[in-house]
Each structure stands twice: as structure tokens, then as C-alpha cells.
Amino acid sequence: MKNKLHQLFAAIGLVLAAVAFSAPANAQLRIETSGVGASQIPIAIAGFSNEDLAPQQVTAIIKADLARSGYFKIIDTGDVISEATQVNLGDWKARGADALVVGSVQRLADGRFDVRYRLMDTVKSAQLSALAMAAAPQYTRVTAHKIADDIYEKLIGARGAFATRIAYIIKAGKEYRLEVADSDGEGTQVALRSNEPIISPAWSPDGTKVAYVSFEAKKPVVYVQNLITKQRIVVANYKGSNSAPSWSPDGSKLAIALARDGLTQVYVVNSDGGGLRRLTQTNGIDTEPQFSADGQNIYFTSDRSGGPQIYKMSANGGDAQRVTFGGTYNISPRISPDGKTLAYISQRGGRFQLYALDLSNGQEQRLSDTVKDESPSFSPNGKYIMYATESGRRGSLAVVSVDGRVKQRLTMQAGDIREPTWGPFMK
Image 1 (tube, helix red, strand yellow):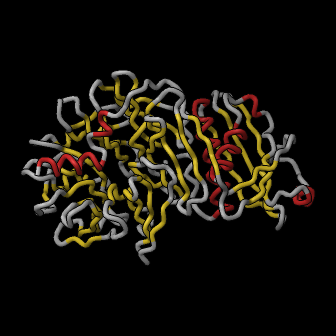
Image 2 (cartoon, rainbow, N blue to C red):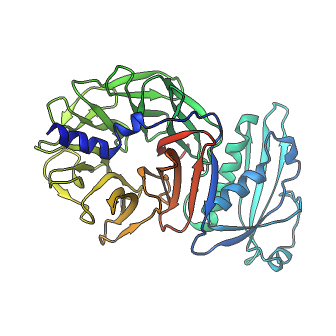
Image 3 (cartoon, rainbow, N blue to C red):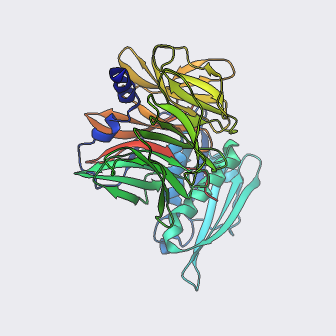
């Protein structure tokens, strides 16, 4: 049984992720995008008047966000147009643009920057949206991301996720770091440094806290850390392994995997560490619990059928139903925000790759073409899945649209980066 335990833990990356880092990391994430959406909207983004006053060029960030999504064809324009300027939308339609973005930047007396923009439909010759936001200089990037989010929502019909954050683990020399960055890899901040491995980061639903597993006590212990105050608490430090935290949708509880009574089983615990309750009672290994989007169920990995597969049970425990049947090895369940799609890692033909399962009809789709994938995580709008992969024995992050058409690779020049988790919408 000990060997069996080792095999499953190795499979889910719990131990491997803790020791596999090798290269130092000291650079910003770089994103390479390939593929496009089913249809692309041609959009012209004029330079904002006076945007050179801001610490960063607002329109460059907007263009990069929209281009990276795969859903927009950016039309180059050397024009600078304020939101107050009267424009002939027919002219822009003739130039091939279905939509036009114009705007301005002004420095306010208190040092903040007032950013205004308008989005116009050149086909219907109508305004689709307008925003005015005043923000401190250090929030210029967030302001640009929010404008990109607004454009995405008005033209695609789904909420944009450019103004969200991601968290991941980097090993630099002998140091492990839990880092937080903007969704485009910019604005990196270190949340935790340790000389011992850190794994399994998970965002709280309100985006203010991250749960993770640290080995600083020479064993895996689950912590919850407030990203604003840096204060943290121990949520699970029982005998044996304490691992795989995931938040309930209301942020009041964590599902975790504990080996305190022998084989690893699924438990829930209050987010302050109290109220521990065991949910599974099996002779197999039950781990990697994930709450469903509505909080009513928990998906988890179990070898009760002879090999690792994904199961679903009530959030109160009880009987579980097997969910995955394609292949003999399926791990790391993640549920889309709308609860309709299950993402997971499947081993087939010696490859560990990202798959998505339509829970309504059982249709399965392979989304990655890499071979050592792990740790999937949905964007909060459900349009993309971020995951870790490996190339040249070095970890990197990848993002794929849920239809598999658009792919991004996030790399660090000399870094080994793993265990990504995509944060919630910012309030």
C-alpha cells in the first residue's frame, strides 16, 4: 500500500512539484500567443490623447490584452483621437474596422490620472460604451485592463478577465516563492519566500487570500495567507500529509486531503482551521478535492476503481459517482465557473495532457499538445484554462481557450514556474 500511495502522489504532482524545480528565476513572464478564435472582430484602437503623461501607455496594454485573447484583429492606426472628438464612423468602417476605441489621459491635481474612453460600433454607427476612471499612477495597468475588459464584454458578450490576477510557484536557487501577478504576467509580487517547497496555491473567492501547502515544518502543512496584511494561519497540521486545499464558493470552508487516519481521505475544514469533518470513508486514496461552482458537490481524485479517476459526491459526503471514463488515468479535477465543464489531466500513450469534459453530454476534448501537463485552472470567465507544462526539463505556464483554438505560453527566461491558479474577478 505504501508503494500505491507513492505512485498516486507522484502522479498528482504533490511530491514532484515540491522537488522538481531546478533553475533560478528573476525575470518577468513573457507571453507568446498562437491561434485565433472562431471569428475575429476587427477593431481600431486610436492613441489616447496625452497618454504619454501616464507611467505606461494605456492603449498598448489594451491592444496586447485584446490581441492575446484571440478574438480581435487589431487594426494599426497612427491616429490620436480623444473621446471628445467627433469622428466619422463611416470612414473607420471603410478602413475595415467594425469597432473603434478612442480616449484621453489627464493628470489630476492630486497626482492621479483620469483615463476616459469610448467604444463605438462603426457598423451601426452607435456608441457601445464609455468609461471614466481616476487612478493612482501605480494602477495605470489595472485601468487599461479594465478598459480591455469592458471592450471584451461589449463585443464578445462575456465578462473580460484581463484585470484579474494569477498565482504560481517559482524555484530560484534554493528559494521557493509564491508569486502573484496580473493575468498578463506583469506586476509580479512575492507573497511568500521559503527555503522549503510551497505547493498547491488556491485563491479565496474574494481574491484577498491564498491557501497553500508549505513544507517549512519539514512536512506538508496547509496555510491560509491574507495577501493584503501578509498574516497567515495554519488550517491543517495533522499527523501525516496535509494537502490539496480548495475553497468553497462562499469562502467559509476549505476542502482538503489528509492522511491523519491512514490512507489519504477528503475532509472539509472551516477557513479558520476549525470544524474539521471527514467526508470520505474508503479503502482507497481520495485526494485533490474541488468544490463545484454552486458549492453543492465536491469533485475529487480516487483510485477506488483500481486507477486514479475523478469522482463526484455531495459536499456533505456520502456516495460518490465516477465522472471520468476515458482513459485509465485521470487526475487534477477543476470545474468551470458555470459548472458545465470539467478540466483534468489524463495520461494516455505516455503523455500527461489537458482534457475538458462536457458534463451535460460526456463529450471529451483534448486541449493541449504538450506532454507533461499539470495543475489546470479556469479563468474566472470560464473562457480559458491555465496549466503548467514542461519543456526542456523546465516548467512553464500555458493558457488555452476552452475551444482549444487559442494557445498562450508564459515563460520566464531562466525560471522554473509551476502550479498556476487563476484568481477571481476583482471588485
